[in-house]
Image (cartoon, rainbow, N blue to C red; front, side, top):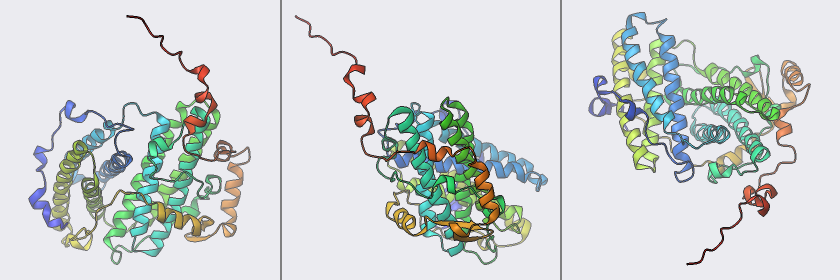
Length: 402
């Protein structure tokens, strides 16, 4: 897809309007819809939220454009609202957490596999293996609290097995900083990947912080606190990959391009016609946003936007299972860690990280506790005696005469 399509397919800003019924639609089904429909909603919502956060901050740098920022930001907010309200109404907080982790794993795996910069790809794989283990710990929590199988949400797209142990993921802050890419020499895909990965990490961090306090189980509460802390590390890593020398207009342009990239992938891969219509509509919205910001960038900075964003998006995000790639990375890099900006074997991590990790785990590790003696097997509900025991089931109905 060429970005010249902006002029042909963008929806004018004045027509990007909503009603309350338009914003709050019938949600998808957590069981009948494909798991990747939910993954798309999570990822697109994360990128929208990242755009809104950026545009709030951008007012400090471009006060002369505050009206335009407010106009676009309000549309982005309503897009995020519509996507959030499409989530299944009967989905529990823990089921949502498992879906958020699946989104981080599968989309993180795809962008890591496609990333052209070897160093950035390594950073993305580091986060991937850690998200993969978070999914395993959340599946163990579901088994602990409810005796249920997380695969009902995952639909067999994503393995449930340990990754890099969550207890070993905690690093001193300086060891989560990475070398930033060179804005003048880096492929546009790398710039988009860093933003998409950062948006997903930020959303997962906020989700774990919001959901964790709602549990009564003390191990669940501690586990969510631990996962939120690691996701804060992932946000730090992704943000540090971005060249700080980019101008604020350059960053704005890249945020809009990232949204176009995600919506295009959502539209191309969606199996639910009702949701696909949303992707088609929002892609048209984002093409117009990108056109507006591109013209503003070129007028203000006197530079061609093709220096910053790709003239052609060659491949959409596929939103398909990455099981083979994840298993390959797991087999070869599970013992990897970081020291400073470099990736090193875990036994070569810094003294600062070792001290920090030991302090956190001084009174125990919730991620280790929750998964003690847990090994995933299919059909947990059928194997769990609490559910299998006929004594807890209602008595059969008696036949009545006629």
